[in-house]
Length: 308
Image (cartoon, rainbow, N blue to C red):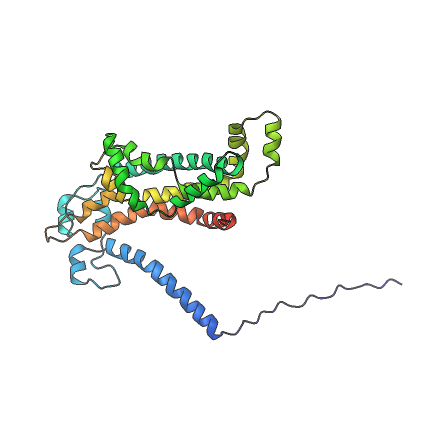
């Protein structure tokens, strides 16, 4: 006589909520506070961009847009006439946003490609090649991480001026194109964790070091390379002080310098705050979209490399 065996029933999941403790309440309050402090400045920029300059003077502390209008964005995109700009408290300045966007794209793209490529070559040399003084040289590279960038601005400016590269993309790109201590350190730490068996097999089969680097090592480091590319592109896109020193005309000025046009005096001798905030939104939007798409990858790559 066969006896049917019924499988034991699994215990129902525990759906009871954990009671709120003082510690959890404080933790949530802290997170909400940090989130508010982080997001509120962005909201205030958008609120100002959607306001009328004259209304801003009347209700400066209003949490909502005052005299709601899209006029500031129309001024930034160049689809608003001078009379309309003056009527909204704008300066009436004309801005060729396409030229500034083009300059920013050229500046950020070329610099990013150069610095990531050079950093990958240097990181491979420090991680895989054995040569006299390697550790000493790497220690010197690490010391560069401790030097504030502001200290190198004046020597770099004198260097670019002596080369006659003021007001050129070469002058913007050259000082930072060949060296980044953080990128080299970041990639070296990742490469040290890679297995050397495939590389050794390729060398035994007759592959050269450059072949090993570009066909084996770099594809294996695609994640950190993508992370560094995004971080470098974002930092270069947001750079202001170095282009301010080197670029003095519209043909080379990036978008960050184009924002200064909205600080010109309006008929009421006040800066065009709405236009300036609208231009800031336009400049920040590409970087915000990039970080929203690749933000998790950046955090995971930094955590995986661990700067160990």
